[in-house]
Length: 249
Image 1 (cartoon, rainbow, N blue to C red):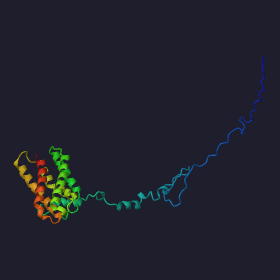
Image 2: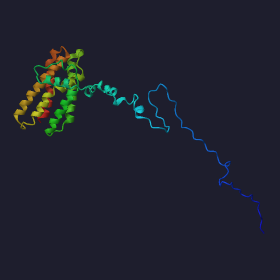
Image 3: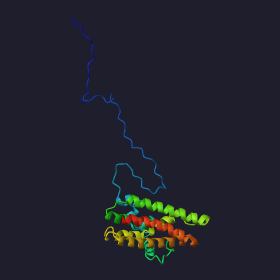
Image 4: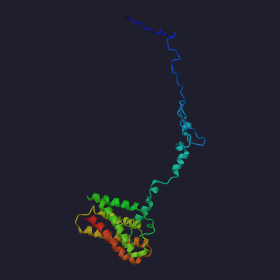
């Protein structure tokens, strides 16, 4: 026994598409959010609108893109050289080094402005000559220079008392520049035979050279410490004797 169900007939429109009333209405696309453009800003705002490409003159003609023009190059001309910004003055270093070459006529006026650029160059030169001699002593030489500077600073200020006007930076600069005779000695030791009396005689001459130059500079920079010249000379002699022994052996 069959049972019949009343099913309403399905009616399709004549165009073959469902009725427009059953479709969901599509949302109209809206423009993306854009922040307000300040009227006083000189920086060009990059829009995301799809439109004609921005011209090169409009994009790079503002204050940001003036690097290629004559006004941008004028800014670089006004800047100081890189060595001057780093505090390295080659002419001043050469004058100070040249004043050490004559131990009898040391010019203390050149060394009033202490620096560490010249001592670092002499330190690297001494390490290079020691390396050519087969001795790797970078840390030893640097440590001795630091200890020597502190030793000379303490000795001199103990002698001068409250009137001491020499700071640690000036002591380090003087010790470093007066290393020039030791650097020349290390270069000469490369051509002299080992375990010879000539090496000791030449080393003694260079030690006296460095001692006299450093003593003259220390006394002159302290302004009026002539009475302590002998003790300062003894301290400088000990310092450069150690460096010369390091070079000889």
